[in-house]
Length: 260
Ligand code: ZN
Ligand code: FE
Image (cartoon, rainbow, N blue to C red; front, top):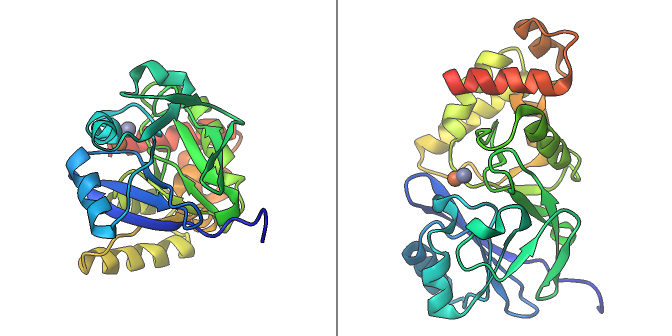
């Protein structure tokens, strides 16, 4: 089956207070990547539990809750660290800087890079098209999105639009378990959305059982995430923004979340 990559094995685990660590293993080559490294000890424990040997760290953005494990893991394993070109100087231990349109091989898996700035100025998303999976860091969350810290609202909207255009079946891993708080807020923006109502019930039941609500999927987010639904007439009417640009509607939703 030359040219056909096997599906990666993916292991997600809670880290720190509300972060997620993710390990991706290419069964063909045995290559193992950590998507972000919130904490060296916790990532090392997850690797040991799986019996996997770390070869790469893929950093989505420079924040400490995504990079504090970089140097300890690199010195313990000699792994290669790939990270965002737009903030390469702020990523500990970076070996290779990547940005929009770049592709690289993770063993037999082709990874594509999307620039998704806004939360930080250089934030990137890693997408593996052959596996229909993307790692969005702190750009997109279940029913939420990252705080717009270093960029502006229009830039963050353009970043989210890129993710919205991924194939709808794309499974998305995110940096944090913020789902319950996001769900509560989402209902204040679009209470009449039946898909959202159903999802909120599902999420509450899952968290009640102590289960994770991630990863999510692009189609699920398109239907229920108020930050992606700037075109919803119900949302526009509620905000009194019927004629505003999509990014402005997004910006107002983001402002309201900041104050919630
Ligand atoms: Zn962050
Ligand atoms: Fe974070």
